[in-house]
Amino acid sequence: MNSEIFAISPTDIRHQASSAALGTSIDIGAGCLDSIDGISIGHAAEGDTGVTVIAAPGGAVGAVDVRGGGPGTRETDLLAPENTVERAHAVVLAGGSAYGLAAADGVMRELRDRGIGFEVTPTRPDILVPIVPGAVIFDLLLGEPTLPTAALGREALSHALDDVPEDTPSGTVGAGVGAMAGAIKGGFGQARVTSADGKYFVAAAMVVNSFGAVIDPEGHLYGMPAAAGASKEALAQLDQVFVGRTKILADAAGDGESSASTRNTTIGTLITNAPVTTAQLKRLAMCGHDGLARAIRPAHAPMDGDTLFALSSAEAADSGNAEPVGSDVVALLAAMAADAVQMAIVDAVMSATGRAEVAALSEMLDK
Image (cartoon, rainbow, N blue to C red; front, side, top):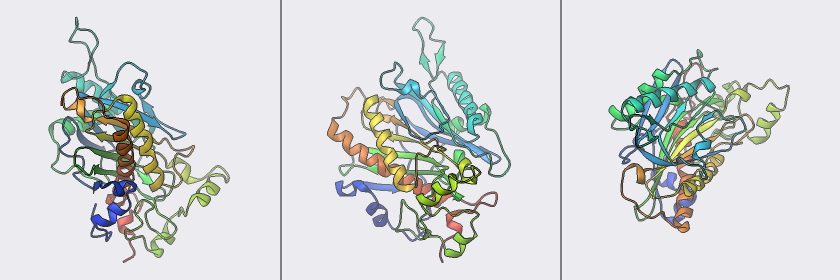
């Protein structure tokens, strides 16, 4: 994210966060997901679509919360607190609508080939089943339709495990290549919120492809009003300007032909270093959706597939069998999760570049 272009400062960013009163600090943009023990990020793209993999080869405690009315997901039931398998070895975020779920097959097979996965029985250690949940966005209308493949999933995983860049990029990368955010270009975004004592963090990796608007009628981001906004001229040139909840719903309720109805779904993954249970992680994922609702209006619409995964790097890093944190810490982590999601969405939109005649906010600024 180029903060100079958008005329924002770290103070501006912090003042947008609900947990700022608790003394948390916020980092936003490329590199926020680097140096997380046991977890790494990889992107791959082909044509006008792509795949992002959040890899946890040691196995990370996982959870998920699905709020959208049209989700495209894989292995989400397995992450429910009442079910048996608690750890995931990777999370896949992909374009291509339901076709994009094929990318997870490639990730699963590559993990198996590397000797990573759930050991089914001690008597057959050669039989491994990697646990790879995932979610997809609908991006088939941007540019030329491209379907993610298992090979593209393998490539993204290989980047995560073997070729991690110094600063994991944001914007029009990975699963964010074909993403739209209302009427403007969406993308992949990242943010990290750290507690006042520096002990815990919650990071968010988000793919923003929302039905709802990310900019208000004046051209400013809902999630970051302090940032420079789009010019009136640029807003007037958009094919369809989303100017708030009433207009969006009115358009969608028209003749059933709203072009916005197919530009949908914000998906992502929260990562914390706190030792938490699956049930506690579920709470973080649930509260993460609060950040989504702050930055996108409306959110969780019938045509959205809004889905948030959550992983704990404490177990992924083999940092010991620490006791799970108490409810007071979970409450803090939940507030941090909402802020991380909100700011990662802001980063995705700010970092995006235009594609296939769809303008990015950075190209529409009021100079």
